[in-house]
Length: 429
Figure 1 (tube, rainbow, N blue to C red):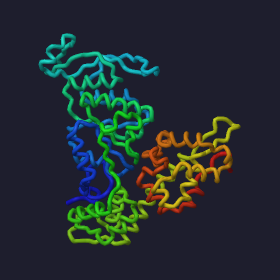
Figure 2: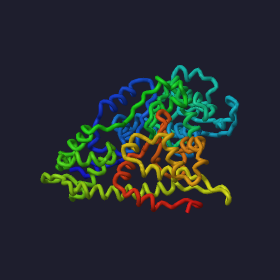
Figure 3: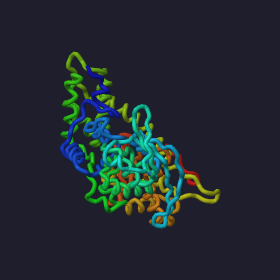
Figure 4: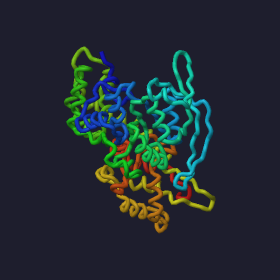
């Protein structure tokens, strides 16, 4: 017997209806066989974590969950801690690299001691024994990728390092990690980076050396035939058929596998199906409509709250009235056709439309738009919008939706009502 939420829906655990796609799964598994970093990217809830869960056992990797406050030092410290590397004492140091001050951590660490010819010749190593295990104490700079690489190599580290939610990091940290990935590759310390964006070569923009040195695996698009395979997999597990409504579900989900899975799950619940059925049952269009209303309610409450946070902008002084670019962007977005939203809103056209609506049109300069776009993702994350909804694609000079549930929301909501209910910024009333 299987429960409905084990067969359909979005989960951190691998669900029963996971399907393999040649363009995605084969690219990922081939990447695992090569000495290259793997970058897995795409909108939220499109299968990035499921892909790693499918092809990696828990003992094959260590995982670091990135956050907006994470630094490279925090990330490397987490890696060391997960490998039974104990920091005995440490001193914060500042070094200058390329004229820029970098904060590091000079540390004395205790690491598991691997016996062997190389290890026995290390005269400077202090060996310790504890509970039948051998350790050695060494000094290194925890903030330097080369020091960490040498440390990991000394303990025969051969796992992958997964950086989850890479997009949460601020841009400077992303740039530093892009540089460090090149160093790690030299030592065969290999990473899997998971991030919410839709453009190719995102990390290569920060470090051109990564071109041809990483394997990129986009998890999108999801083809209709692939989505149909999901319900084929689920039929014998629940003894429930969605064949008569699968096209209707696909039409509503904008090729988002996460939304598709959730509507399949909620359609089953609407039909009173919580587990494997003893008799065969077919899901009806009425069940799907009930599921769509349920998910619209779920997504609407989140997205409206996120939009309210997104447009909020405080004046620096009582005399200043900000440009409120986020507010006007949302107004333009909700006036656009779904086709244009899916393709992405072009920067030039977006600026012109904002100027047409703006209370100070002559003050909306390209530099103001540039600042808004460069900080688009980080400003959302800093306001607690997780995952972020919007991202700026440098390669196409356009803003794209990177939360796959937002398409479903903006198609099914009352747009005029949503915009009217958003609190107008101070000074615009």
